[in-house]
Length: 273
View 1: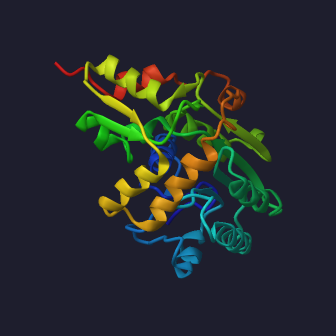
View 2 (view 1 turned 90 degrees about the vertical axis):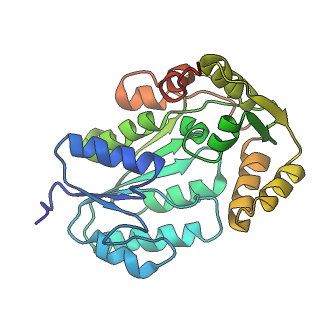
């Protein structure tokens, strides 16, 4: 039987941050209910019948929305889920949000106005997109083509995000706060790929291409249209320079600096001999 006072629900427990949050909570001997589309009980944002069962017997929830809070229908889903959480007696919500996304901020407002304790963790692009997501295959193949231009991004490590989330879930001092979290350094995608290539002794060619060409390439590889729409939105709208700044959210929440991109690269891209 799960201890109601200590059980934390982690949505997207197989994801980049969810898996790390769950692992860190378990290391603190906290009971975690880890759910995703492949778990039992199952949780699927597209199947509202799976929501209420996972909320039973928990007091706090880490919310990650798939595929992104910017997609159509996210606001309605978050509103319905938050109302369900209130009825289930949830006391605390921690929402992972996206930096520079107006749609995400509308979802944040729903959580903030819920009447429950809350923390918003508003993050920049993850370091792990280079090693655990859509950029990994091109990097390993030695050829990366992106419609990113020269815009710089303060890439943040998923472990830093997870540490902020865990602190927010277990310590009341983080209640009702917004932490905008970034890495400590601005890098363009070209610079990031170059750093990975240099540190790991890999030959990786980087090419900046028009968004239309990138979309055509994704369609050739039969990427789902909703994924194409989201990636197009992120490169066209969010990567327009609005996020070319560094924040102190990690330091504010944890009292330490965030991990530098070079530390991430050293851990995830071993030197090719």
